[in-house]
Length: 146
Image (cartoon, rainbow, N blue to C red; front, side):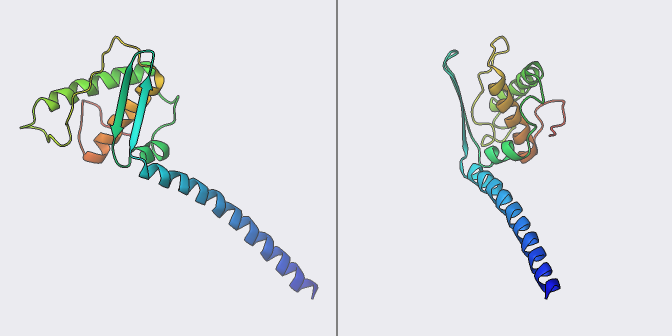
């Protein structure tokens, strides 16, 4: 009888530990699923009076789940890459007969001499990486990778 109670208590303990892990994992999955549904990223800086809207299905989810965390790259690195990506992007917008106009719809007004801050550069840089990986495009000499 003692062995049966011991086995019952042990199995109850194991069961409770597993449900806690599932609950934590399910909360994380719920958060990621809500990001999948919210397709618009808005980056606003009132001081510089600019706004960037990224409307891309799956970008929020990708940013939260696969992108390098904030602080991984320094701002100068991202500014340099963003400038190169923007130049190539804008050239492709101006050549709709050569590049898919549904991918390159609008020019990006990104100036190298303006400090947009870390958050803007982080999200813009990651959008370019996401775009290149998702649509199998290459916006410069660098192989896009996470």
